[in-house]
Image (cartoon, rainbow, N blue to C red; front, side):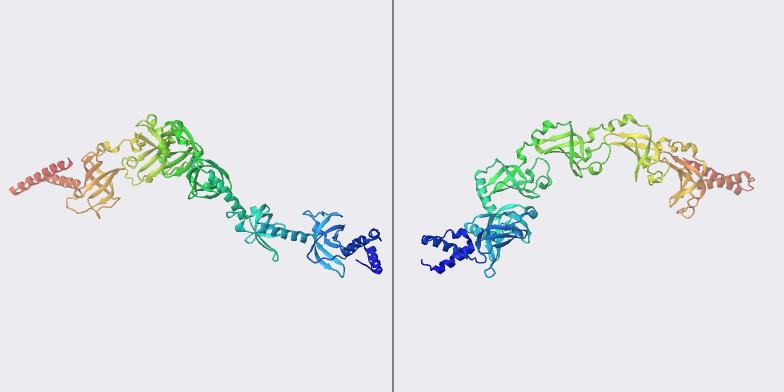
Length: 599
């Protein structure tokens, strides 16, 4: 290559201006090689870049706003200081460091260059994304935030992870994934639109398929395996055994009672199960957890013999009784009839609640049927066994009325036993329609023990029996033929009821009201009227007294007739004598008839 003296001089002057004496020392008059080196340096000194191009530069200065970078151009490039700050706002850069940059702005006329370190890094990322996509590789990224339809992922650039591609199954709490790092597959990208779509599900499916194949090779009935709870339903738990799902039915979770699997498990729990059955064609796996331990009913008969006292926790209440858990897998039933010796319990909830600890006696056990019958009342002594010794028949007791019913009074005797005074045993004489007419709840009364029936658990009392039956001596107070004064208490078509004393009534039958025949006394007599009658008959057993008004009238008529006969003079004719004899015979007949009626 031939260069004129003037051209050489010009190059040297330019060289001297650009590079100084150090470069000038490299030029000799020895030949072409030194000249070629100089020319190369000269050409590099006028090196130019295109906007968007990457370059390697060296940091030559750092101030509070910018970093100056030498990229081999006659003017240094500027980069904002913010591109060199870390998360804490600290500047991590030193003079002499090399940095890869992108030319944002190239103004040759004004000799001004604007550079960007961040954009250079992003260009590298796009190149990396392309390489990964072409090679069907994977990329690491951090889920930055939730966005509509999925997540925003930082892979050096902002990428989009659809919610459907985040996991193998729907995620209940999407916020749990934010801030975590995962490996992703690049589904598609578009650099012009700055769009990158990722998938985590594809990677998980590939891993699951590999694991599933291994699991299917090793799975067999009776094998104990570890798994992860994948889903929970009301009838059981689905467990991931390693790419193969198995069902742990609710009845195979525990030997005990399980209301809902969610009481024991949460999604993601690691559990150990036993393979109960396996259908390779349908890929159905039945799992069991309780089968990992021995059935507690196998030793229940020896552990809970009849008559033994046991303790347990109430786990369920029904209309007919209480279920008590003695241990996990073994429950006994306390029938409602076995809960109390004395109380008539309509529902167990009246005296007991779920979760309560109780003691009971084993009444019967059938391990084959998985049943144990328990009794709560048997823990204490049966008060009916000693009550007859404590209160023999004829004993007078005093107690408070605890309840009043249509048929009688319940009186508290002991804390656990009530005695019944039937309505018929309240009074000898009063006609009581309802016990509340005489007593009220809380009244303290005395009563006599009439009967104790242990088998039927009945304690019969009587109030009227404290006093003697007034009907036993009514014949002494109201002898037949006695004239009595009484008060009308009731008027019926068949007669009039008359009270002789409190509780003692007699009946004047309609036929005994008057000598004249009357159909009904109603209208003739009223309640409260006083009247005089004659006692005709008494039946103490049937508690009846027959009275007669007619007999008093007849006695009055007899008295008048007798006085007339006695005071009449001797008849002056045969007719008079005959008349007198007839009257005497009539008087005698009436007396005999009255005696017959009294009998």
